[in-house]
Length: 317
Image (cartoon, rainbow, N blue to C red; front, side):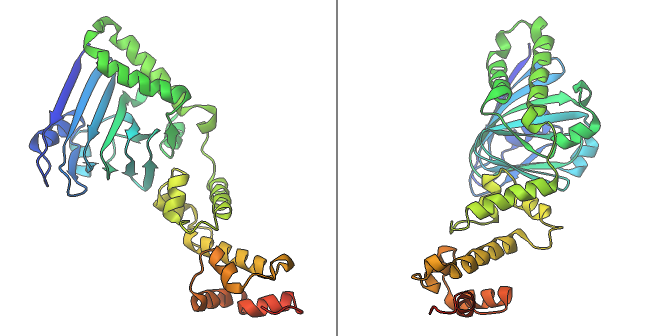
């Protein structure tokens, strides 16, 4: 069984020639570039298992990019499944942007340009395999490219362990077993991608409802934002905004309207008459009284104090 190991030496504020060569040679023109002021370098181990290749890769903050030119010059029919062990990755491919947190995996199409961005020190397990080795249809493969996968338990954890062990033990395994092990790896990949919880991608409306439920549960959290929601739901901010594109309001506007609705509800609640308007507003992140009053009037056509008087005419705000 063929096993390989490479290490790119660090050189501050530039991408080392050795690391660039490793990435370009092994991944069809993949090119690393700076993502911060940190050195750009990494290490990689790999093993060939028949038609399947398994890798363990780690590095400093960087962006790994397969350009349109590289995709044309190095055509490929392969797919990759990348499981993030430490750090966080963001995949850009076509109009997709997927955030891949530690313990999750993402699949991408090597035939097309893509970028993987790492803003912190990171490590990944990667499996590369031919598209034709799948029992999935082209439409099912496209669906698989639209989401991330949990590899902390079940078949995902088994796949991650398989890759790590195969790479570590590759040089000591009988070469005659390589193809069989590759078949076993493909079976695990298929198990991850077709698990019941991920077999069919939910429609945008269902995902939107999931996002709205999360927003409503966390309206009192001052840190609630598009970014925090994206992180909690393993999506990217760009994906969240795309899901709300046909909703009539941006997600930021939805958060603001839901918070205003919560204040309005509390203002007209007889059990909260002892609470001042400012205290009810600040509970949902409105700390600037004039700005809050303007936003409330724009939404409801009246001031907060008038809304309370109209609902509870015998009380004083």
